[in-house]
Image 1 (spheres, rainbow, N blue to C red):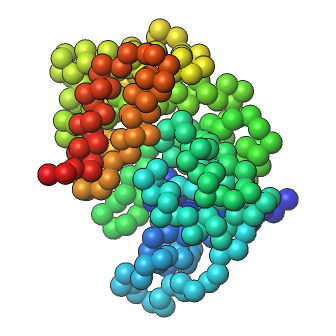
Image 2 (cartoon, rainbow, N blue to C red):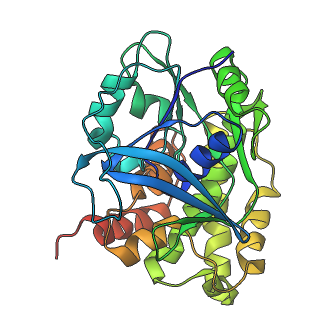
Length: 306
């Protein structure tokens, strides 16, 4: 069955999914903050150009050739991949309102464990499916996106998620349906929370080579695991050491999206990646002394004042 598909937010993750669909003949409609003629994914030495236009709410930058059409009306589609950051959901509300109908499935390609609650108010009667994104992709100076590892998503095992899996079937973006999605999502959140230490220090993964930072990261990961267990995630005692080992063993120049946002002066996803641990810890009576320090500092880095 051919399904109509749209990608809202063709940044690093959205461009990867759009290119995966385009390669198998399911080119999606593209919607973003600014108009563009197309988007490009770089995989190894290959450039995959996904034709647009990217329909934007802002004007197109200078491009060669015909200007992208920005007046094409959006209408309900079968599947929407929402790939804006958690801090940008409200700004994407107009696209969601136009693209979502009662039979639409919205797959949320964002960090955190609260995607359904955050997006549902903007999706009307559409079904919202959370996702765990397991692949890194970064912007290139020329505006292209480079995929650094095989693209992979984990979704909950639901009928709506099966629709998303079918849309991506046979593409370079693999999809796994997990019967215990809560545990998978929290496992990724522990990793994302610890990565917040990079944004605080302004350093890449090499900072975890410091014994004091590695010790702090281990205690912080353990704190996150305790909260995860309180809300029903099945995470073992091996999770915290494994998360920290992943950072210690990573190339020293490896980054993370929250550090990239800090470097670029953009708002940080501090609440969905770190604040949630503190909030849910308090709700369940779990002490979170490290979060009590990390979260206000990340919030201040992101939002000021000063």
